[in-house]
Every structure is written in structure tokens, then in C-alpha cells.
Amino acid sequence: MTATTENETAAATRAPWPLAGLLVVAAGTFLSVTTEMLPMGLLSSISRDLDVSEPTVGLLVTGYALMVALFAAPLGRLTARFPRRGLLVGALVAYAASNVIMALSTVYPLAAAARLIGGLTHGAFWAMVAGYVARMVTPDRVGRAVTLVFTGGTVAILVGLPAGTALGVAVGWRATFAVLAGISLVLAFVGWRLLPDYPGETPGGGMSLLQVLRTPSVAIVVVTTAVTMLGYFSFYTYISPFLQSTGLSEAALSPALLGYGAAGAVGLLAAGLLVDKRPRFAMLAGTATLTVALIGLALSGRSPAAAVAAAAVAGMALNALATLLQAAILRAAPAGAADTAAALNASAFNVGIGGGALVGGLVLAGWGPAALPLVAALLTCVGVLGVAYGRREGFPATVPSSAG
Image (cartoon, rainbow, N blue to C red; front, side):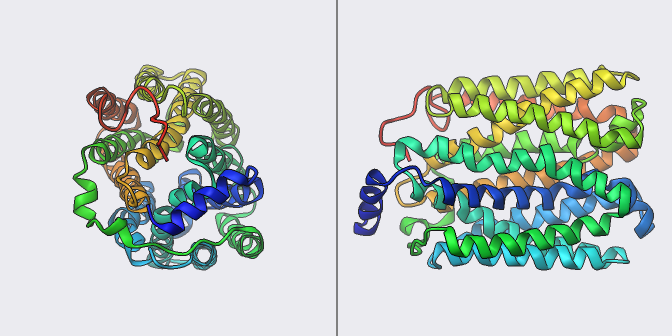
């Protein structure tokens, strides 16, 4: 441990819970997740306006996630020595630029360019955010801090996505992206005033990307993250056409997504209660519940009520898992390599998100919406096996006292 890290830890021990800073970062995750997921709720509107198919609009999610998957870890290392506050604020400004371009898009290639810029920004943001949060608190508070920050993602699903969907239906999808651009600029100003600043560090604590990835505890978390997200997002990217295929009207999509987000808040609360106490049990319960919920969706047939209920259970499990996996990677990381490990896990998340959008698009085009949750369940079942395999490395039953 470096002298700088020792001083930061000692200061954090004396300091109170850094609520203001954590809330600003949580707002950043809200903006980030809303920006990434919004095309899913506006799939039909964007498809009509840009005169492309719904699977082609789904590629806006794929391309965005591909940028994160490819560049999160390299960007994390490239920016490792940058001051943390300036990097986070810069990412928020870049989100604003991406959303402005998206709002101005009248043709598909321009929208695709906007999403690629957003994806690069997303990669830089998620490469540093978990490690930044970990430096704001003492080791025994890492799980709770990550849970609070991930509340922003849950609020994005609970409020951001349905509100954006409703706004898009009411006045046009471009207005939604313009609003997001304004929010990101305001948040950048607030972040510059309120966030603590930390200096950068040596990338990976002196380890290469491959050395960090080959650490057994990191490898199992990264693989489990990738395959679980691949399965889930092969369904969730196309949740709108799936729910409509069960008989749900387009006007009812926003309330349905609101219920999904509310269930996600329950999952986040459960994760917060268990993340620092019974992490392995929570991971097993989360991956198993997600798989069962997807099977329930496959069996929902033409019942909108059953489909919405099963989707809500899936959202509850997914939100819990997002928090649990972030905490797991911070604990699995070798000493001094938390940012690199977190960046690798961010890549894994987005391999799953982008790959899921691609797989789901192929399933939707080839077999129709009814096949989406069944394919997703087969993949998330592999995630359950990953957690089971990682009982000693990656997903231990308890949190070591030195974790963080």
C-alpha cells in the first residue's frame, strides 16, 4: 500500500459518511444508465422516425455497449493518472455532447455516431467510478457505498427510462435526449463543486491488464458478469416488442417499465442488506431468481399481466446482481488494481449488454419475440454455475475483514 493510499484510508476512517459526494456519483450513474438504456423504451418511435427496423435500432445499444466492452479497460489505464474529480466531470460533459448529437439526428448514421461517442464516454466513466467510490469510504463500507451509488441506476430504470419513454411518446424521442444533455451539464457543475478530488495512481498497481484478468478471483467474476448480462439483455433490449406481443398496448409500456423499476428498487435494497454480510448467498439467490423469472416470461403466453409480473421479478434480481457484482470485483482485485479490475468488469457488463442486443435481435428476427426469454434463461443459467464454481475465488461466503 502506498503512502498516499494509507493517508486516504486514515482520513476516511476519521471522516463521516460522505453522503454528498456519493449522491453526486449516484446521479452520474442515473444519467449513465438512462443514456445507455433509453433507446430500448423508444425503440418503436426511433424506428419509425429514422425509417429503420426495430432490430436495427437495437444495434444502437449494441454499438454503444461495444465501445464500452472494447475500450473501458484501455481507457481506464490511459486515464489512471488523471485526477479523479476532473475525469468524472469531463465524462459528464461528454455525455451531454453525445445526447445533443442524438437529439439532432435525422438519419441513422448520425444517431449511430452519437451512440459511439456515448459508448466511449461510458467506458471512461465506469472504468473509474467503482474505484473512486471505494476511495471515498473505509473498507468495511465499500459494499454499502456501492449500493448507494447504484441506486442511481435503479432510479434510472424506475424513473428515467419510463419518464423518458413517456416524454418520447408525448413530444418525440429527440426531446428526451435534449433533456438528458441539460441534466448532464448541470450535474457536471455540481460535481466540480462537491466531489472530493483524488490524484491518479499507477495503472493496475504495476500489473498488466492480462495479469489482472488472469487472477482467478477476477476471472470468475468477469466471466460470470459477462454471461449473465449476455443472457438478460438478449431479452431486455427487446422488452418493448415482447410485452406488446403478449397483448400490452404501447401506451401501457411506460407504467409497465415503472413497475419493473420499482421491483428493481426492492432488489437493490436486498443487495444492500446482504452485500457486506452474505455475498455468496445473495449472488446465488440473484442469479437463480433471474433465471426462474425468465422461464416465467417464456411461459407467460398471451397474458400481459403474467409477463409484466415476471419481468418485474427479473428486474428485481438484475438490480441486485449489478450491485453484488461491482462489490465482488472490488474485493477480488489484487492490491492496487481495483480500478483495472473494475474496468475489466465494466467491459464484461457491456460485452453482455451489446452481445445480448445482438443475440436478441437475431432471435427476434428469426423466431419472434416469444423465443427471447427462453434463450435468455439458458444463458443466465450458466451464470448460476459460475457463482457455484467461484465458491473459493470470486464469490466467497463471507467478506474478509481486509476487503475493499
